[in-house]
Image (cartoon, rainbow, N blue to C red; front, side):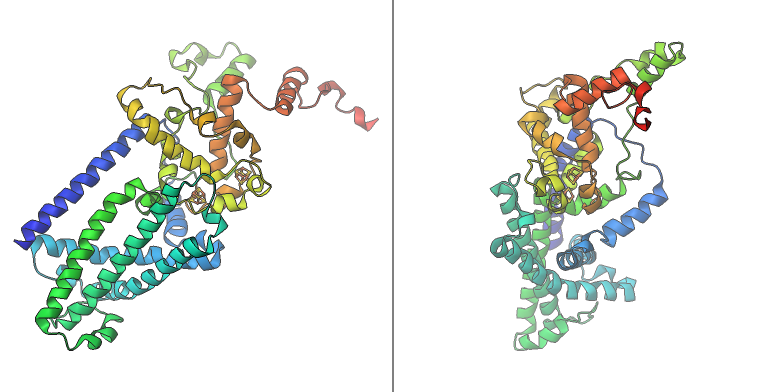
Length: 427
Ligand code: SF4
Ligand code: SF4
């Protein structure tokens, strides 16, 4: 009976998760291509360094250490969760015990990490609620973003407590065939030696069910919160650009135009596939690439990018974190309409209604944000795409840029002197 109930709950949890995922995948279908995913070996090394070893996270040593421990704890505890699911479906206990030392190692590590993660989550909560760390705040973060964080941290804490309870009372209930290692729980179990084996077994089972049900609830809440990065951050790092930071993506249609101007006989000029693209750059979510969208889902809202942004530090409107908060919000707003009708127009745009021109032009393209982002998000590349739309579709650039464009057109140089006069300074 217990197996049947568990399997039904598991199927419902998987079904709800698959439904949510299908909505997100439908949003990806609206997006444009980005770049081909090549250099798999290089990507795997990058993923190992940045996602698994968390190299960028450690640039803030204390918070980096706390975050890395929670991340590694999360990965380890997934082994225990997987075993619980197998136990729940097929009955029995400790189904993966046949793995021997590896099983004991993982169960033992999870037993330690449950305490570490619980302690560090409390520190994270104190940091948010009491210390009000500047990096974790910003005008782009609404109260909902903060509540999301509190709920996720609270759930993680309860998950860890139920894992501790499960382990301690597993030992107190004295199973005939003890499986796994419990370095912390074995120290605490004697405190409950007065509890009968049956009573301990009931507490163990209560914690077992509470833990796994919370895992299912948590997994289904995540896609609606910033903590979706728990699922998306590793793939996002794997899929990030491998070109050096600052290398602009080529606009092939423009390149063709330039080639055509230089050589009108160019054969590709007449090819029908060389028709002008529907849009230059990015104006709204239907123009963004799949990479921009997965970036917005992966963004942890940690604020490391904004904390190092010279524009933000000097009081400009720009906050690189906001760009990705805005993409996600705008996709949630316009995406459902676009799924039904690709020409859907709700009278708003990502540019201006969400991201002001002032923000777009405040960027110095210094790359500090992309350098610091623990998920390898390339903010300046996205900002350049927003600028491409403004300049190429609306001819809207700052006065200084317009002067430079005219000079380049007329003089072949950014200054207001003919290029024939460029050596006059020597006189
Ligand atoms: S873009 Fe990167 S650095 Fe900025 S808030 Fe998101 S995850 Fe953090
Ligand atoms: S590239 Fe732009 S957004 Fe990023 S840190 Fe520099 S000025 Fe800020």
